[in-house]
Image 1 (cartoon, rainbow, N blue to C red):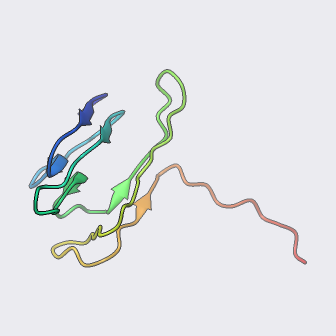
Image 2: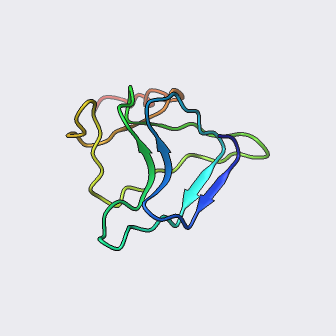
Length: 100
C-alpha cells in the first residue's frame, strides 16, 4: 500500500491478517469505533514479528512517522498481552555528554 489515505472508516482503517504487508507514505485518520465502542483502530496487524516500525519519508520533503496512542493498545503474538513498542531502523545513539 503506497501513498494512500484511509479516512473516516469504522472499526479498523487497515487490517492485515495472515500476510506480509508494506504500508509506505500512507495516512490513516478519523477511524471511528463501532456503536458498542469497540475497535476504532487505525492499523490492526495480527501476529506481527514486531510491534510498530516507522521511518522518515523523504519523498517531496521530510515527513516523520507518527503513531498516536490513545490507550488500550496491546501487542504480542500469538496473544496480544504486552504494551506496543514503536521501532525504527534509522535510530541513532544519543550524543555522549561530558561526565559531571
